[in-house]
Length: 120
Image (cartoon, rainbow, N blue to C red; front, side):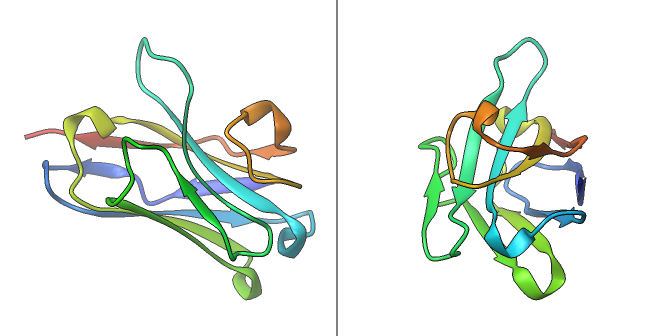
């Protein structure tokens, strides 16, 4: 399964790094996707990294501000978020699956999420 951590409340312009700890499956053979959901809004794809780790993908809304990475040796994935904006406020979820995708239904595993709040 997947367990996210690292969320919190920060002011606009600050940074946070989310972590996703994986267990119970072959993490080295899995792509990772990060999604988020704000109150009253649709479930939104944020970023993904291929199982090889060589390709990373970002939504336009976070490109240049967020960085996705993974550490196969530690069974961990990360989402480094900088220059945070109030519109980044959401619950962030980590997904794992065979292929990187913007479609959450194509992933096999999903964590319970971690809250990120950006407010002055």
